[in-house]
Every structure is written in structure tokens, then in C-alpha cells.
Image 1 (cartoon, rainbow, N blue to C red):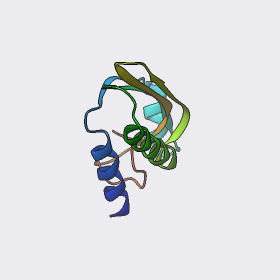
Image 2 (image 1 turned 135 degrees about the vertical axis):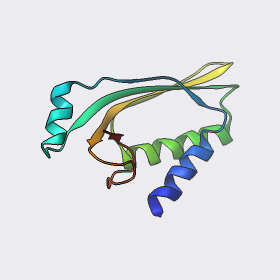
Image 3 (image 1 turned 180 degrees about the vertical axis):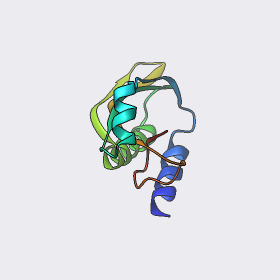
Length: 113
């Protein structure tokens, strides 16, 4: 229940942002490793854009999103770039490969196979 609430809160804060690009590459070796029961993670890169200037309220929301993201994902890089007309966030990290139905894993996010 707590994970569902945190996911909903993160989604609510991302209103107005949409992922412009999400890149995930999975090899057959990684999938085979997950099937054999090994803890397997794959790299991802996600880029979000929000149009408009970065005011104090939006900055506070983005800081909250960063804290939630770092608490529930293995993040290698969280980069925020602000210009006069838009804000771009690039997140790089790893998510687990989970064998089974969506929602059967203990992780907040994952690639279900």
C-alpha cells in the first residue's frame, strides 16, 4: 500500500511532464539470468520535459520527485537543466528484471517478463 501511495504521489507531481524518451536495452543473457533466479538489473535512461520557467513551487516538486526516485530506484545520475522556456530532467539508473506477473515483485519499479 505504501509503494502504491508513493507511486501515485510521484505520478501526481509529474503532471505536465511526460517522458520524451525512455531507453531500455535488454539482452537475452540478462533475461536468461533472471529466469534462472539470479538478481538481474538492466540500465535505463529516461528524459522528461516540462514547459515553463522553474519557479520555487516547481523546484520543490522536482526535489520531491528526485528524493522519491532515489529512494525506490538505483539511480546513477539525475540531471536537471532549466532554460527560460522548459525544464529537462534526465534520469539514468538500473531497474530489476522480474519474472512473473506485474506487481509480484517487491520493487516499486521493474521490468516484468
